[in-house]
Amino acid sequence: MDNKLSKNEIDEIVNFFTKLVNEDNILVIPEDVFSKLTLEHGVLLNEYFKQTRLFKLPTSEVRFFEWLKVNDEPVWNDLWNMDSADKGMYCVSLAFLPLILERDGRGMPICDLETVDNYFFSVKHFPDREAQLFLESIRERFMNRDDLTTAQLLALEISVGDIDIWHFAYKHNVELKKAKDAVAELVADNTLIHLKEAEHLAPFIQF
Image 1 (cartoon, one colour):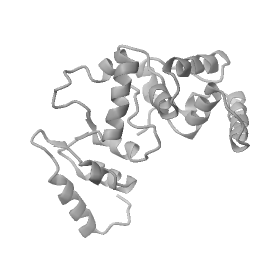
Image 2 (cartoon, rainbow, N blue to C red; image 1 turned 90 degrees about the vertical axis):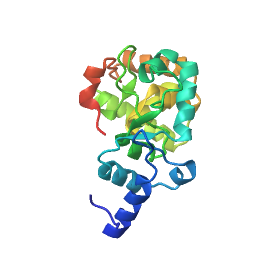
Image 3 (cartoon, rainbow, N blue to C red; image 1 turned 120 degrees about the horizontal axis):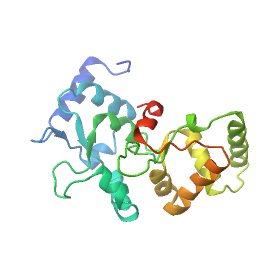
């Protein structure tokens, strides 16, 4: 791992977090500790924890999934098809820790749904030069502080980084139906490709 930490510092960090692994081999990070974690910490923990591969989501992401349960229960069921008291509830792979530590509202990506349509997008889902020109015009509007439609805002977010429609709606306080309608609008205009099946999305996912 290429980082600025010394070996002693790395050992101290790993030893500290090893003590936070519970009896179910899940890393449970207290909120006051989580709030101080940096992206570098996330990369380090993901790399050095070989046996513990799960961690408990922070409160901020748990709030999102509780919102999701209310606003799109079929998606929540696809992700967390278990009793709410189950010890594995809201525990995910450490591979997602660096993404969550970006703290940019994208959170844990929802991109492998099996029973409902996926709504996960990356810049690669803009198919051609015309779509790129569309993005450039949106960026110009944004820089000029002009108002953006929901579809334009969604396209801008996708151009910045991978995002699913649920985190987009939650981040911007947009009604979920309106957010999905924005996807349909971009698809109808041949600006965005919507791959609904997890197997078709897989080549576009990098994390």
